[in-house]
Length: 289
Image 1 (cartoon, one colour):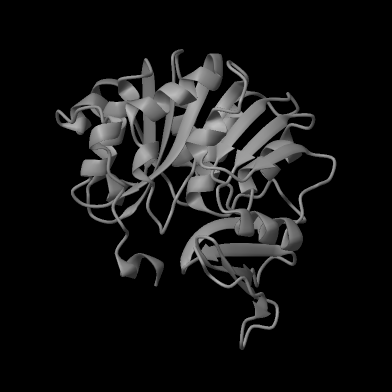
Image 2 (cartoon, rainbow, N blue to C red):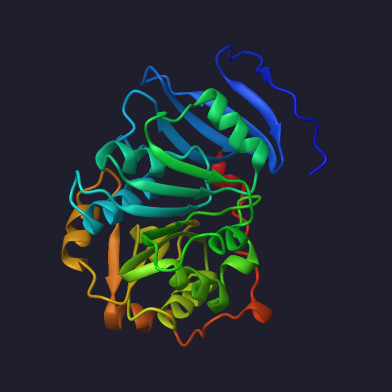
């Protein structure tokens, strides 16, 4: 976006790395509790947590929930084929590579400068079968072979908002095109009161997949605060009971909604198409304080 790409060490934090990337100002902040772990922020918004010594560690609440989706897709050790829309610090791709060696993965991350930063400062295991494409998410989906993926994970944010063209039925048609029969779609969604975006996204995904489940904490479900919701969808029966058990036992417990309760929650929201799509709402500044 015309920013000067200039790496420097942050004042007062010798080990932090600050660099202008295409999407804003990226910061890599060392984790004081884990020797080689880092938090990636973009314009002050936390994006990823990466532990280079323990890539199976998922520090963020939403990443842990997406980790449950991965674990319920296939047992540890069984290779899978995954498309990650949105790269961040490549946290979930590292998790898949660590827990399911010989998996083949594609990361689609539009911000080429961010990709270079992460590759340089948080290098991937050279033995991992991970390919990174620096293109738009929908363009990247078009480069994935038909019926190739066991799992597509969407975790795309621009300025802390999901771009409009990644919220529509047409986008989901492209997702379905790269999923194998029985494959799973998962997404990290963010919304706050009155949860109109979340309701619309659940209706949209429900228009393209037979089964949908969503996990969020109680405060988000009640519309009390802005936060993340992780969605899981497929055309086969979802492991709702096991997902519920795992999310309930997390350090930050989440509640899973599915079936009639989830349909009732949408409150008559209709599926979103390209011509009506809008970006997800911007989080209030207080979220990142």
